[in-house]
Image 1 (cartoon, rainbow, N blue to C red):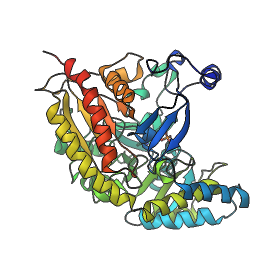
Image 2: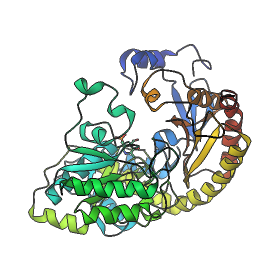
Image 3: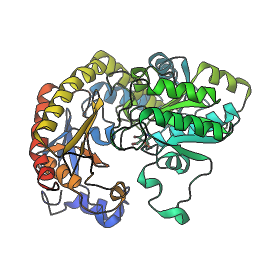
Image 4: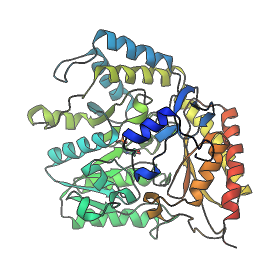
Length: 446
Ligand code: PLP
């Protein structure tokens, strides 16, 4: 980014001086000011119009001009800007009813918070109270959030980045293997057998098995089609709940409202955030089955937040879901996803440094390789938390110079545009990537 605009403007100077940046040594925090947005594009203070093929943190699924949400939010602020969660408001009631309708299986009742990490923390508490057990089993290639228990449940390098003295892990969070043939020594069947055995050996102490149905920031990892239903069965056999973290995959990203549906699973708990409001407001949700909801009729739900069910955020949620429905964006994710898939596969044929294309709908990615014949990553997993410039960073920077933004993570270029895109946007993004991948091609081992 510095190459494009070395001089910081006044906003960038103030921001740099007084704001602590996320996930970074502060000397590396050097944000570019965004002053405007248009459709799926963000516009910098220097007037660069950048096609956002990441949806920021895979969250601005509606692009940037959903007028309906802007209207709903401003109306709600004028009517009832806030009341505490003990009062009832129409936006919360209607959104809860809507979520019961679009989530899979018998999921019915929703608890609200403001971020994905909180939604997961709430899921852990609910699973523990309901099952009377305390452990949570998650997987190594995963990210579930930055607060204590969610970060401990994440296998992501950020879990251990500060070392155990500063950042001890929360007790009771255990981890199993992943089902990804590309990059794991266990095949998917073995990984399920391993989890089955873990649950057996944990002796009935596991409350919940937590998974991203289709892993996001740890490399867009697609499971085999039958993986999730089999995992659900294994969890149930051991008296553990299946918790699907759909913070990233929810709300149409995979061409279904939820990836759990895509894989024919009926989780006991789903967590969501990001696409729930298209990120126009911070809102997260933990939705549980009717049966779990019933349990809490006579048992304490020992959880609450000042902003739980915030009426303005819930109004944004309803308007967002209306927009997905009326503009048929879930269907568009599926259609554009097929086109994107064929274009990415063609790109992989042209570039030897593309090792594998993965993903479904508008939740796709390409993993880079140093060696055409084998899976040899340019980037070690630990590089994700260092300030070292990696080949992946350079590819991302070149794409940005070409005015297309991709999120890059764990050796993978994540391709997750807003659900509003057209084929012309895909063509534009592929052209930018085609040029950028020359960098990784020429950095390959001889
Ligand atoms: N779960 C998944 C799958 C995520 O991708 C993320 C964030 O990227 C989270 C949880 C945490 O969400 P938040 O950043 O809103 O706390």
